[in-house]
Amino acid sequence: MNKVILMGRLTRDPEVRYTQSRNGDQMAIARFSIAVDRRFARGNSQDGNDATADFFNCTAFGRQGEFVEKYLKQGTKIVVIGRIENDNYTNKNGEKVYSVRVIAEEIEFAESKAASQGSGQGGYQPQAAAPAPQNASADDFMSIPDGIENDLPFK
Image 1: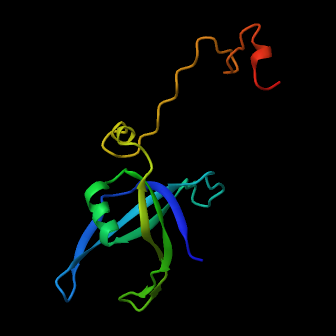
Image 2 (image 1 turned 45 degrees about the horizontal axis):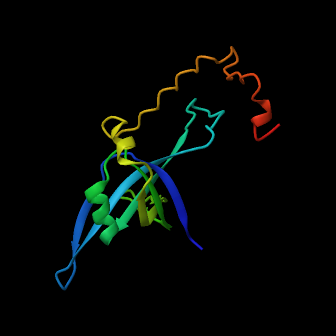
Image 3 (image 1 turned 60 degrees about the vertical axis):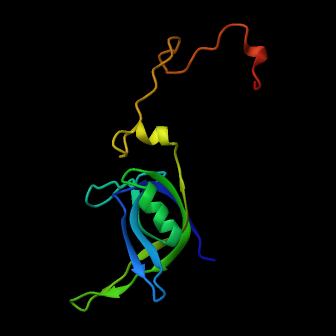
């Protein structure tokens, strides 16, 4: 089984072109790249680069390609469901280049329109830290009011 599910943000605006078939129909082909955050940063790298994201090249065909063209732009957070294909070729120097791409079969928004607009120009902006509660102690934990211990669902 070849199935991949990725959630990330577009690294640039998608590139869309249309093919012409023999019967005159056109089909959209959208190419885009997404950055997928890792749960944990890579550590101990030789060059000091502790990458926290992986970048995947994706291609969408037909109606999915039209959806990409119409609704997606740099910074949009999406979920891509699809399959992985080898994208190997020989370059001008005769060297074999190995790579993979994700063929997007389903694409969904991963955040609301308001949330994406709140992040500026559609690009990724880390969210500001929430203000500390007024009754937080020095260890950043909120104090439990007296007499409420018996009402808590856990002990």
